Length: 354
Image (tube, rainbow, N blue to C red; front, side, top):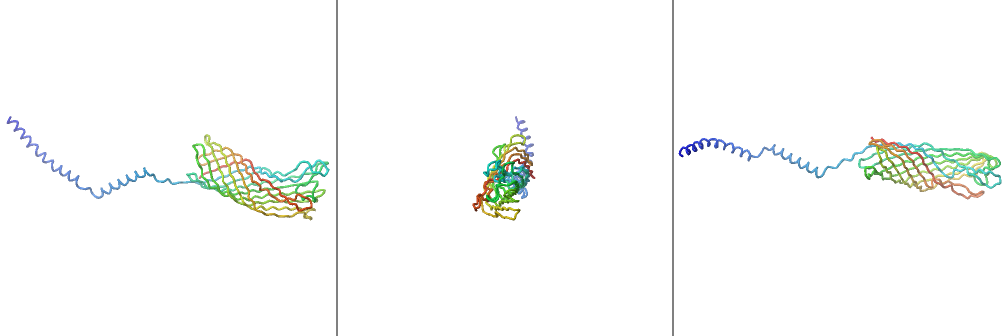
């Protein structure tokens, strides 16, 4: 038993130096933990906390996205048929009884080519601004002779001065210029359908010429000239819808309406005896509001930077034809030739974004 206690005492004395040797190390570690870190370390820790806060703030309130856009250019080929009433020049009567009856012969403008071109800027959020210029020109002419055993009546002359004639020749020209400025936004209704809604301003220069010459019987190189010019501007609103079907192909439809206020200048001149006798020479200028309706329908194809359309387009200018006309013989009874002006036909459009 004494030996056990003696062994225990020796073991305790042997372990104490090791324990006491560890105390300074433990104390030093505690001091190191208590001593504050250097300023550089504190600054780095502060920067790390600040970066963490910023990242957390961006997660909660992400920064606003910048709206970028791109320019685009558009060119459109038009194959249009212009139409107008009141382009008659004569009546072919199979009889000679002095009572006009038969077919009314008129001039018909020919289908011709035109162009619409322009461009603008389009934002990624759908807003779009653009400007477009449309040009179209058409002309026609024809000659008519009195039928055997019948009568040819002039329809553009002052009644009572030049009536029955042997020959009639007419010509007409039509020049159409329109400038459109548009501002609108493209809205998406699902993955396959989107619609553009907007409006803007429109300015138009439209010139119409009607000329006729008559000869024989009551006419000796008689001539009639009836030009009509319109210049005016106004507002235009509408929509353009595109329905995507597959592989970039789809259908489109468009409808626009306009109201233009402008001046109409109309002249009427009639002479006989190769210009030696003036029968009529009047001028008229007045202000008028012209409603305009436009519609289009066709197929489309597009990718990210290119688009194409092929379709049918129709435009009608209500009451744009308004020219003076004498309707009674030997009096100053003045009437007017009033009608619409329309264009319809093929439209082929390409658009490039850049």
